[in-house]
Every structure is written in C-alpha cells, then in structure tokens.
Amino acid sequence: MLHEEAELQALDAPDGPPRSRFAFAVTGSGHYLEEAMALAVRLPATDLFLSAAAEEVLPQYGFTLESLRKTFKVFRDKSASSVPVGMLYSDVYHTVIVAPATSNTVAKCALGISDTLPTNMFAQAGKLGIPGIVFACDTEPTVITKAPHEWVTLHPRRIELENVQRLRGIDHCRVVCSPAELEAELSRRLRELSLEWNTSSS
Image 1: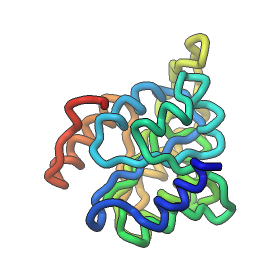
Image 2: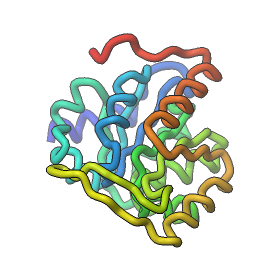
Image 3: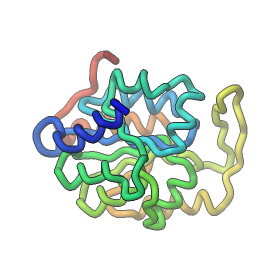
C-alpha cells in the first residue's frame, strides 16, 4: 500500500526538468531479461514500467519489486487506463524503451494496439514524437532463450517475424534484436541527448 501511494505521488510530482528521464518498460519475456536489466541499471535517470506479466516473470529471474525499487521508480500496470502514461504528457520522458519485448507486445505495437502499460507507453510516446526503442525477442528462424531453469530453443513462426518487420515501419521506433544492438542503440541515444552511461550500478 505504501509503495502504491509512492507511485501516485511520483505521478503528481515528477523529478527534474522537462523530458529528462528514460522510461524503461518491461514485458513478460525472459529472453535476455538479465542483460536488458543490466543496461537499465546503467542508464541515467531511468524509471521502470512493468506489465502484469513482467511482475510475474521478473522474480523467476531474481528481480523482486523490493530490489528494483532500490534503484528505480517502479510503475505497475494497476489501472485500466494505464494512468502512469500521463507522465508522457507532462514532458517527463525523452525516450521510451521496451525491453525485452514479447512477440505479443511486438504484435500489439506493430498493429497499434495499446492495452498494457508498456504498449500504452510505446503508442503514446509515438504520438508525441518521443523516440521508442524496442528490443524484440522473436527475430530469427531459430532463437535460443534462457528459461528460469534451462535454455530453450524456439522457432518463431512467420507471423512473429513479419510483425518485427511491421514494427520497423512504425513512426519514431527503432527495433533492436540483441543485447549488443540494444546497448549500441542506447549509446547512440545517450550521445543524442549529450548524456553518459552511469559508471556504477549503485
């Protein structure tokens, strides 16, 4: 309850000058989740936006809400209208990142569907001309991914691969397909903003 009150207070009183923060949205994918979160920690002035599925998956990879709140402001998918999205209209964020993005999230973003906190953040950012970076999971005919207790080989269907291509055509969206590409794209965005990576994880 206290954490929910803190989230509401953060909505009312965002920190910093206009468009000074990263919005890092996490979906229910475990594919390179640890690598994506490691990059999130290194970004300056970053808030987390979790889908309901992300809340279920993150603890399976060792990320509890309590541990995340030590580093980030955490916003959860607890309202039908995705209330935290309103901070985009208040000019809090200069960049929206969705990483890692499930094939479900990629499909929704590519087709303009916004019914979760991450997809709402992505859609509304695009309407405001705020750059979005999406780390898509199912991008190759064969994908080897880390499940909570083992490595799994997946074979994305043609529809999943086609949706990644559709997403590449969405306005203000940059699609990446690996942790290395995500890091490179984030580095490019930092340079555009005259910002630097954090030098420590604390």
